[in-house]
Length: 392
Image (cartoon, rainbow, N blue to C red; front, side, top):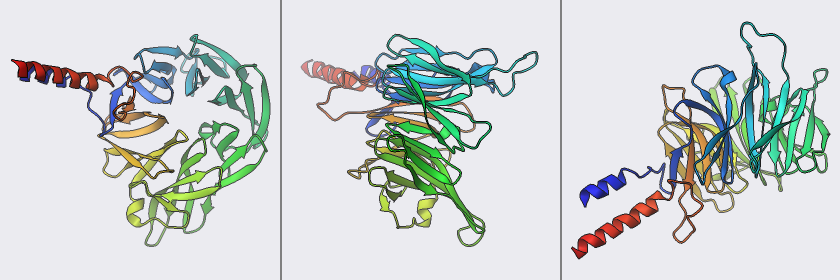
């Protein structure tokens, strides 16, 4: 009996924390570069070890079956990046490599791809040469077209069902890779701070204004948006005085009300808009904010190389933590599933990790990924073995 139990327990995946079970979905030979999750699918970028970005690949992983396949390969002298997924569609773009290498000629141009998950086909939807960083949400794809002669960027909206594309606005974007799209809203970093643009009424809302002075500078580091939530981090650099140094702070902006609240990154407590954080609350390194419109989250690191993923429900105040042995980044959440890239010092290799929240008793487990429900079956088997021993 003891031997059987030991063998069974050796097959169990170890939870990252109480309430979550994790598994690595990237191969050992693949360096995961980041991805997104939507429903039963994970779309991510990876490449073999090394700096050669011509080896970038776009992978699609199905959670319920564990099937993984390559859906995107770069053309000659190109690399691919920027995977985005929503429902049954995915998108990414390819762009010229920084260094083509010896013996190559010509200048290639950017191309945006659309992939139908249902039939596995992928095709080009923009090959004008200056389109990049597509974003997808509920049957719409938004991308940017550079305007070399001006300061603003043209924004193009594409309807997947009709194939219609149109230029919807121009925005003064300073970080194209950080542009977000959800519903009718575009979040972007402009020259003066973080802004929210509404495609419905063409209103540009200032969420956070950068501050620059002789003593300190403050600007937005990173942000995430979904539904009614925009969660972001700021970095304040103070050049002199008692607070000299670099500090990060965490904020939640509720789009429908326009209200901003500070967040304690360690406890997850909403502090209100005017309450300044204590020195101990500024000590962790905060990164990778994320949200699915229901919960918000972020990564904080106090004792490198360990980090924690914090989940907070702004409506109820409920907070959960997933403690990790490595450093997490590029976190994406959809309901009871989370993915992130995890690295372990001193290696620069990144593993793509999928975490499944363990449901309360009585909930349906059939949609869980292979391996996630194994703990339930193991417990049942152990119970049966114990009954047999009692009968003997």
